[in-house]
Image 1 (tube, rainbow, N blue to C red):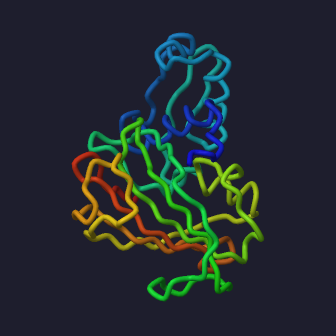
Image 2 (cartoon, one colour):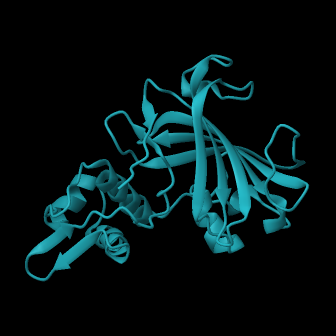
Length: 233
């Protein structure tokens, strides 16, 4: 059921570079290769790359010096759309993409913590990839007070981007609890771990721009491929 909207190529490139900066693969002050060389290395056009670099500049992660080149500016408060996505490949970074498994509006199960103002929530299940490697199974519950309907075709690969652009909902802070849990019955085989086998696990409670709890999620990840990373500076 892959019917959501993929991110534009320039946004994918900018997010990949932002995650490489956060992971330390691109160091503060480092000069990037010339744009034509960089575009060829990334398999894209110079125009698309320049849009990606412009997005990094807007986030304060890039300084463009006339006649000199483009320089990395690492910062802990970067507002890229995957800033709260804490799963990285074991080597660091990795471009997140997603395959949508299902979207349903349901009454909130009793085993969920209290969040939001509605008795219902939208349950979104997805398989997450990093650099096309399946790494994470997600079950996200968004309080139903934020929208009357949710169609799979309207969703973006980045839910937080969809929240901002379509629902006027900004996730401003999250609370994560990390442990180990067995994969659920509905987990797709693509992850490479058998159902009911243990996996890395974290639960997340997310808060909106008015500091109200808006979303709860459960996330299972393959520790042979990826790890949870939180950088505190």
